[in-house]
Amino acid sequence: MGKLVINQSLITSENAKELIKVCPFGAISYSDNKLDISSGCKMCKLCVKKGNGLISYEEETVAELDKSKWKGICVYADCSGGQLHRVTFELCGKAKELAKVTGHPIYAVLIGFGCDKNAEKLLHYGVDKVFVYDNPQFEDFRIEPYTAAFCDFIEKYKPSSILVGATNLGRQLAPRVAARCRSGLTADCTVLEMKENTDLVQIRPAFGGNIMAQIISPNTRPQFCTARYKVFSEPKPTEAASGEIVNMEVTSNMLLSDIEVISSVSKPKDVDIAEADIIVAVGRGAASESMRQNAKELADLLGGVVACTRPLAESNIFNSKHQIGLSGRTVKPKLIFCLGISGAVQFAAGMKSSDCIVAVNTDKSAPIFDVAHYCIVGDVNEILPQLINKIKEAKADV
Image 1: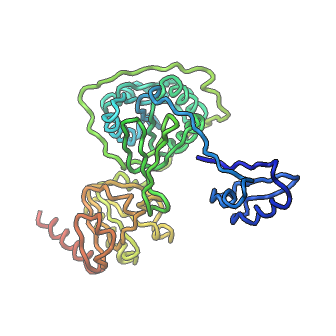
Image 2 (image 1 turned 135 degrees about the vertical axis):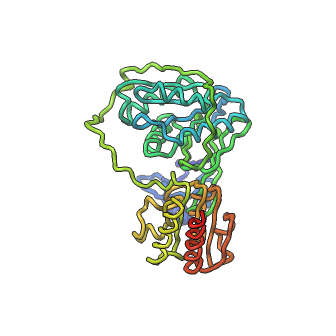
Image 3 (image 1 turned 120 degrees about the vertical axis):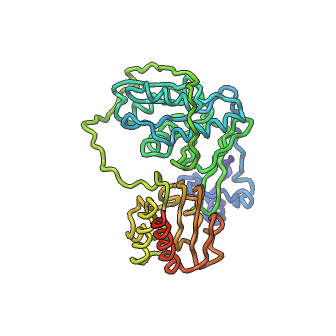
């Protein structure tokens, strides 16, 4: 990084006017005999080139970080209502892959009340140490105590990388802890890779999914990232537990909070397309009422659920909870039908890890065919009824 330095002793009202004209972004101003550059500056450096020494550009020197002091890959064990979210197990599997590069230990941080069973469960997923903050005040999630406990662990054990599930809880906790540690946070990562120097390569879609950005934090530790449920594969638990449970001290200062939980009410359980093994997804090419009915019939025949693309959710044809993609849900079913879906990057990023993808589209050049395992070029209005009849016949023969 660099910065612009103004030589105020050489600034006059005359040359200040010339500098103001030079800036194409209107970021330079002059008042009270002082030149100022605002946040509107895009660092184009025209003022440096044409300023005759009035403004200079200086590279900022960053103190080199001693990465040897930071060791370990930590997974935040997302626990709500006494149950571990399954994204925790997926991240444990990913942490195990990353640790093979550096040889770092794998940690898990568990904050809650009555954590014994969950801590024991984590030892079946390759975690070397589970650090437990167990207290009745942690039974309900409150941001200040959870942040204090998490930061206490970081201060004492200095993990190099921290993986957090992008759940409702994780999306609140991770940025707060990262800010407290003065570190960056990369949200909704789809790929994680590790360098031998312990730099975590965090890859996520950017600019509306049009590019994949590779983000590293070479001069800050710990490195924070979040990942959605179903992005990574969940490993099979081992029969025998291995590792160690470390019970951490919970101090009174950790429990300070301006939030009082009066009561907790569970919401009625809705259909979660992320948990479905079979999905019938419809796009604009299958948005008619008759096609939606056929899609529902196909899903019912197969014991699956119906999902949609973003335009159908934005048109209120479907609830947003049924939307697949970067701004919707990430899914990883055993079988997914993509009906009348072109396959924009935003949609594909949310389902391309599915075990089997069947796509139907009239356009043989549709991007969805690049990720599909079975490609059918044709009109979904003609093909879907035939597919339903074939399935009914097959079921009748059983």
